[in-house]
Amino acid sequence: MIRAVRIFAPTSTIRLALIDTAVMVTVFTLLIPTMVISDAVTFYLGEDGIARLAPLIVVVLLTMYFSGLYEGKRLPGRIWLLQQLGFCGGVGLISQALISYIYDPLTLPRNLALYGLVASIFALFAWRLLRDELLVRLDGTGTVLILGSDLTARRIARYIDSHAGLHLKVAGCLTNGPGYEDTAVLGGISDLREVARRLRPDLIISGLVDARDRMPVADMVDLRYSGARIEEAGIACELICRHVSARDVRPSRMLFSDDFDAKDMPAAAYLVDIVAAALLLVVGAPFALLYATALRLSDGKPVIVTELCAGFQGRPFVSRRFRVEKSGVLRAFARALHLTEWPQLWNVLLRRMSMVGPRPQRLGMARELAAILPLCDYRQNVRPGISGWAEINLPPEEMADAVKEVEYDLYYVHNQSVSLYTYILLHGLRA
Image (cartoon, rainbow, N blue to C red; front, side):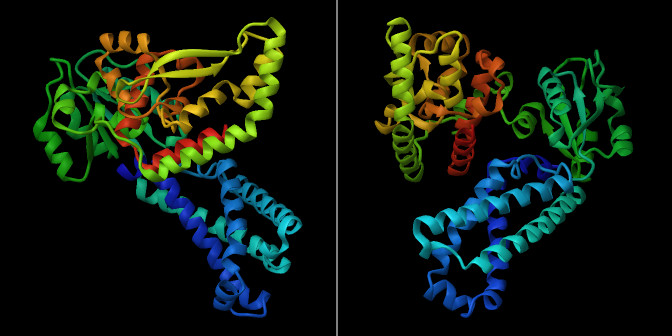
């Protein structure tokens, strides 16, 4: 069952991209002797073949990413897959034409580029179908059984029902108390062994918190050693829903583990921050200037909104954003091009912020939230960011829910890594 859940982790996306790269490189390598006069080794090392092939593969991989080929675990359908791969191959050919116009020595021979892309499409198609078939066999039925009536377990059940892409299904729950709204009650807690034998669930989520729901320790131990996966509701929430359950974070976890300790980003992420911020500042400057001028002429009010926000480890910094009107063409223009956060890129260059991290909060609001929900302070253990884990997972109408936002931010603090940083950054750029 862990395979069924972890397949959604950003690291699996990177592994899948690396395998796709290997497939394409293998296809082109096999075609080189028939399409080029020299052999593969001579072409790669003596004729700048690596430098000529790399741009094409990068373009195809990025197009695959933006086409949704790295979203979800299972394929929506074979026809859809073939259509998307064909589109990616077409973009690859167009990129070769553009590169030949700009600097012809970096392009591949035309016959190698054409036949290599066609063969790569079919090779990737076959590989993705094989992967999908293997996932079906390895992951099992995706059946989930819930014990007890814990609120977190109920949230997980609702999340699974609303996310078909997980390929998980809640078979029902066992509880001695009131049942769930949309989940069938299969019996009491004492029926665990019989129900598990009949359903053979891939995952059993334990939400036994009610005094009436006495934990059947012996049955759970037997099921665990017979191969069943059993997780507490709080841990299952992180694995499946990809956010921390604030109500299940015990004080001992904060005291005796380093899960949410302060972490500064590695040098590689900092370098990407500088490059990305500088590039977006230059590219967005004409649009930002046009927007600022139009906004100023429309009502004469200041176009920059400044706020004192809580930064890394609570250190205050000045946050600057473009003012956005409540409605109208200028609002649509700013939202479409994400110009609101453009001034914040200067804070990224000054290392007060990162391209990826929790949303910066006003200093006063951060203190008020920390008094109500002490976990809020832990979101300051990473640098605030332009885009974050909460932004790419929560719909806009739910971003006003401070508790939900904190739960997603804590997930990022706990799992901060270069792979997760890259995953969120690419989602932000795609938006």
